[in-house]
Length: 116
Image (tube, rainbow, N blue to C red; front, side):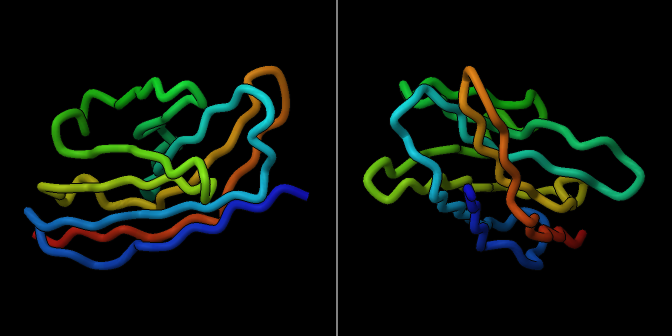
């Protein structure tokens, strides 16, 4: 059973920073993508940022220049550094792991709240 364990959410004022972490028990033997999604109340879950096993990154337009996704391959951990946070970044953030040719897994979610 693949596990994703998230940490780092919390309450921060607008303009502040938070760093999310997600460690996985999934094997990195096959090509995969790790990423962060978020879901605000009443909204659909949306991709925030992702990083492939070859290091290729992808960002939502709304976070480009503010958020940075990175990965520690040895620790099988992905990070999301969030700077210049805005109230509209408030959401539950979910870690995601997906094999390119197979299954997808989700973390339990961590709340990020940005006050104005």
